[in-house]
Amino acid sequence: PTFHSNPLCSEQASKRKSLSISFSQIVNKELKRSMAEKQANGYARSDEEAGSELSKEIRRKKRMKCFAYVAAFAVFQTGIILLFALTVMKIKSPKFRVRSATFETFEVVTTTTTPSFNIKMNAELGVKNTNFGHYKFDNSTITFFYKGAPVGNAFVPKGRAKARSTKKFNVVVDLASTDLPSNSELGNDLNSEVLLLSSQSTLRGKVELMKVMKKKKSTQMDCTMTINLGDRAIQNLKCN
Image (cartoon, rainbow, N blue to C red; front, top):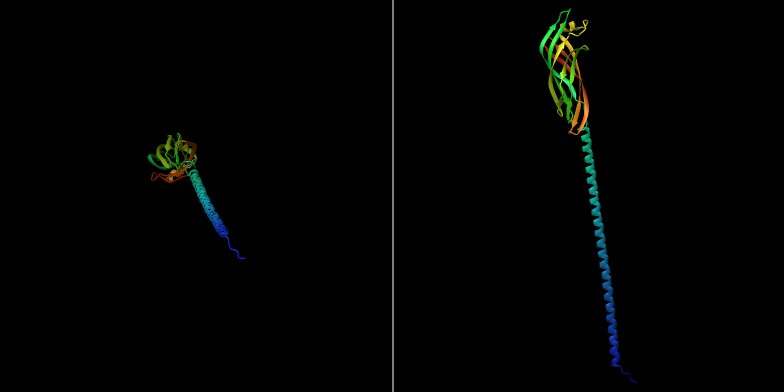
């Protein structure tokens, strides 16, 4: 017998085949889209992670720079404080000295029996202040000696030596041998026209820094000098 195909069955088979192919294509498209999305998400996450690491590195470098600036400023400030403490805040004792002298009256007796001298001397004194603050000193007295025996003194008025400067002033001293012992070597010295003297004094006062800090400071004078009787001049003036 001869069998003839049913047109309706063939059409249904064709439709099923077409639907199967379409479904397969849809599935493939969905798989490809899903894979593309995953790949894109992976790239996005990689870019995000890279950006996060770069941001962290930038912040770390900024912190390191900030720490470096703070450390440099601390070192600089410490250096300034040390320099200030070793220079400005270091208070030294001023120096009090005889700078020079001239003579107004000059009476010298060189006889071997009663040698004597009576000299009026105009002495220039100086208070050298090397501090960064003023030095205010009180009234004082300067005494001149001949071989340890006092032969004259003068009043030193109170005053002020400015910062890093020398205060100069003059005092008049009457030098006389009236109180010297009779067995002194004065006659020999007067005959040789050389009179060796020394001077001593103490100044007491305060160094004032920036009108805030005050510190008491005293200074000692210890000078030696030679009066040339022939030239009537001071020679070999030395102060410690």
